[in-house]
Image (cartoon, rainbow, N blue to C red; front, top):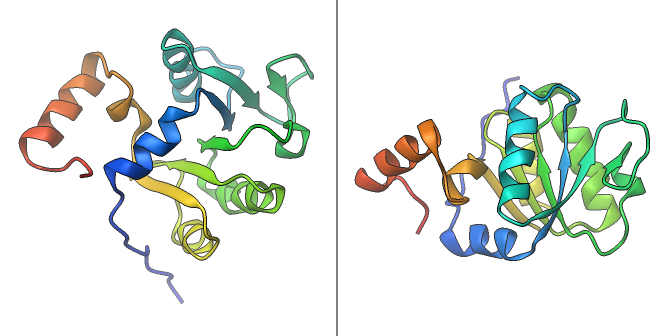
Length: 155
């Protein structure tokens, strides 16, 4: 059985709620500085976000942690940029920990993870790229302008 991707309209208010908190954990942070997740982290840091980077292969450090369970209780925003095979498990850990604002980067979402998030009474954002809503530059700015022109941005 193929699980279809649940559809729910993501609103601008949901995105604002997520981005209004200046502390974000990033699950799937990479040690490779050229990776997409590292580019996201660099971009968000430049914008003044306080980040916690999660990767089970990290050496534990102030902003680098090995698991969602290692996050302090006051971290309530999670950006998931994991391989699709890990997304649902990471989402479940976050929900179990009580994290209420979760953004699954559009390349990481799965129908099963989306269904779990929608059933969990959290602010779930999916099917969107975080770059589009955080002062995009370069190709991300071009994509943003196209979405805006053609009415593809959340309202």
